[in-house]
Image (cartoon, rainbow, N blue to C red; front, side, top):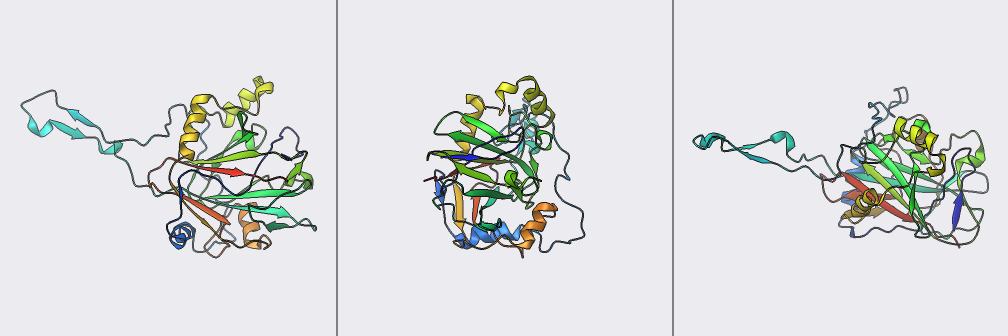
Length: 307
């Protein structure tokens, strides 16, 4: 199975069939769905300025960031006769209850009229079918997408040095399309299945802080300019091991079970104008949420079934 996207400077393969994550849980679909949707704004002002990328972009590679949760530390006083100072907790290092990371995603398939229609991720796709992913995080954070083809070495297909200058910051409930429907060439707006059947796996990674050791922004642009034969960038084993570890974390999963509907106008406006989705907008087809409220990363693995 292969997916192609005819786009200058950037080619990628993608995948879907359902959805596979180790240790997935589904305790109460309504609770997960409610927690995700209620974190959206109640309403959206159509005249408001775009919320997309209002945060300061970080152009470092995140070499000092960590995917591990910071723990409370205890220090001993150097003076034994001062019991009140024998131990001291650095509150600034205590774990913070930040709320679980959530990701909603919807898979759209191009119909015969060129319109995006919701499709079940377990749908069997055929050569010529075209699909697009809409991703909705519930936090201000960072997005990474990796593709592993036929179990081979993963490569980073987002961020890309030639798209948005390599930046990958995302805003809560402001959907991002992969690939974008705003491309001037209609052929660039979809992933298209082609070639022989096979299997790829996409890893969608949402983080609170930049992943350590992963180049983005100006760093990624400079790297790819000097190493054209090494882009898309491929993560080293140490980085990939962290992502694989994140994929095994406990998560809650809920699916809508409703497919075949066209993309709504509210979703189009939220995406193209960067206003974000409010509580009146349709819910994503699949919502995944970390069990832990302090987890620094949420990893989603998607397999595409091309028959």
